[in-house]
Image 1 (cartoon, rainbow, N blue to C red):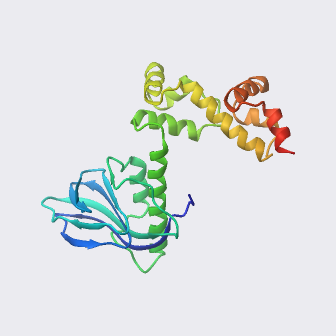
Image 2 (image 1 turned 60 degrees about the vertical axis):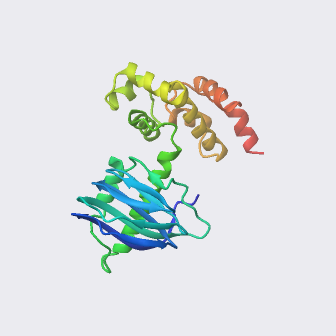
Image 3 (image 1 turned 180 degrees about the horizontal axis):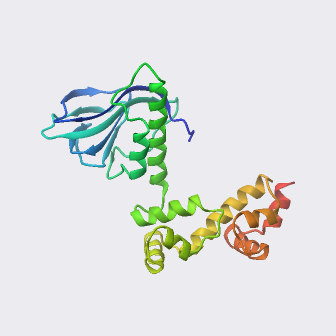
Length: 252
């Protein structure tokens, strides 16, 4: 999937109201994406009732018959209407529960305006904010767990993959005990933590070797391995070929 998902942003609002207005039933020809920061809001999507609560979101696709009930209590919500690039689908669920993470709230804080403006590149900035939020949600859907602790572990590994990683260093940085870190990761993902780390390092090494960007020794050092021999052993276990054999084949 391409990184820029949005062709045109047609509506945006980030507002807190005493109660949300009702929207009549219509068949939309755009994506309608709403995130709830506080309160509740009720939508209907092709006859299905969807009650959104704090940190939930709804993504209504083109062709959907939808409507919204009049609210009865205060709600703070963010809403986008947009059209995607030709041939681009957004493979997210219609009802996305508890998806408005701290990271997404930080992204929203970059564009704090209540509505779009014709000045200061307002629409362009909001376009990029929406695109980043959608990519963040797509990334979260691809992870192997929804447990908040495991997501922190996965994010830390991804951001520090070229460093020397250990159970101790990860547990310390995400403020969990070593025992709990190891146990929760294994229970949620079905694999041992170090197995996962070595697999990810091997996959990155494979990409570097195929692209012929660095020498094998440099790759080993770059990925935080103590020695080339250990790197070669781990790489062969996860990729099925030695680094030197893969490099030779990639040059043919």
